Amino acid sequence: MKTTLTKSLIIVLALTTNILFAQTFTNFSVVSTGGNLLDNNIQTIAVDQSGNRWVGTNYGISVFNSSDIWICNYTSIDEATSDNDFIRDIDVDSHGNVWIGNFVSYLFKGSITKYDGVDWTTYTYDTLPGGWPVGLVNPNIYRMAVDHNDNLWVATGGGISKYNYSSSTFTNYTDSTSGLPYNVVQCVAIDNNNNKWFGTDQGLVKYDDTTWTLYTTTDGLIDNNISCVAVDINNNIWIGSGDYGVTMFNGSTWNTFTTTDGLIADGINYIACGPDGSTWFATYVGISKLKNSIWTSYTSSNGLPTDCIYFVTPEASATMWIGTVCDGGFSKCTYTSGIDQIEQSTAYAVFPNPANEYINITFSENILNKTVELFNVMSQKIGEFDIADGSEQITIPVKNLSEGIYFIKIGNTCKKVVVRK
Image 1 (cartoon, rainbow, N blue to C red):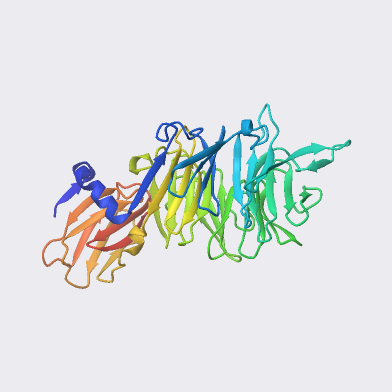
Image 2 (cartoon, rainbow, N blue to C red):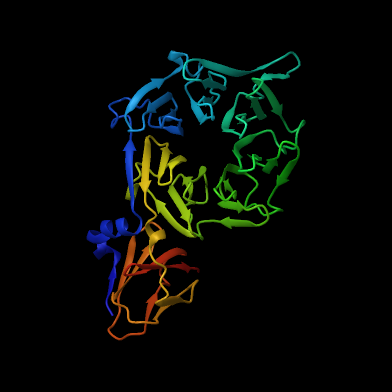
C-alpha cells in the first residue's frame, strides 16, 4: 500500500478541489473597480427587483447592476443617506423601496432612509420632554427585515421599531412594553409564517403579532448571546452565537453545531439561507456552507479576498454575495452543488464512524478505481491510498488528524467520516 501525503499533492490539489467543491469567486475592491467602490469594508449587500446590488460600506452605498458593472454611489453629499454614511443594513420591500439603516457614530445619529426610486425620506430618533422616543426607538441601528405586509422591523440598541407601511407610522417595543428580555436587539428575521424572530444577549424572542415567546439555553440554545438569526426554506430557524456556534430550531427540536461538526469557527457574524437548501455561516476566519449534512468551508486560500467575513446573502439558487471587513471588499460566489451531487455509493462501507485511530473500508463489489482519497472540509486533499488488487478491505490511520469532518472519495462516490478525539 502506498501513502501519498499533502505536500506531494500540491500540483493536483486545484483540480481535485474543482471536482469536489466547484465554485467561482469574483472579487470586487476599490482597486479592481477603478475606485468606484466607495470602501473595502462591507457591512451589507441587498439585491433590488431589477437585479441591482446595493453595497453598504463605511462611507456610503455603491450600486452595481445585474452584470456586475458599477452604476453609481450614494452618500450624505447626495442627501441619500441622511448625514451619516456608515451603512449598517439595506433591505428591499415588495414595492421596490430600498431601506437603508445607518449605524450611530460619534458624530452622527443613526437613522433609516427609504428610497422609492425618486425621493429619499429619512426617519430619525428624537425624544419628547420626559425622554419618550419619537420615530425610531433608538439611534443605534443593527439589522432590519421586511415582513409579509411590507412593514419594516428595525432591531436597535434600545428596542424594536416597526415602521407600519399602510400608515407610515412607527410602533416601538421595549423591555417595558413587550416580551423583550433586554433592549439591545442585535438581529431580526421573518419566518415563512410571518413570525418575527429577534436576537438579544439574553436569548431569542419570537413574536407572532400577539404573543411574545422567549427561548434561552434552558430550552436548547447553545448560547443566550445571539449575534444573528435566519430562516431557511423549510422554516427552520438558524441562530448564531458570537462565541459558541449555531443552533437550529425546527419548531420542536433544537440542534447545535460547532467546529467539531464542521463549522470553520464558533464565532458567527451572519447566517444566510439559500433557495437551494444551503445554509451559510460568516465568521472572521472564513465562511462555511452546510447542505444535505455536508460541510464545506472557504477562506482566502481557496478564493475569498480575505478571511474576515462579515455578511452573506443569496441572490439565486447558486449565487451568494459575501461582504468582508479587514479591507477585503466583497465577493460573488457562484457555486454548483459539488459534493452534494456525488453519488453516495453502497459499494463500500466505512467503519468505525465516528473514528478515533483508524477507519476500515470494506468493498461489497469489485472497485474499478483503485485509489482512496481523503479530504478535509476545506476541500483540501490530505491523503491518497492505493487499494491492492483483489483486496476486500483497506485500513487508513486517522489518529494524527485533528477532530472534525472528513470525506472519503473513491472514483465518483463519496462518504463522510467524523474523527473524534
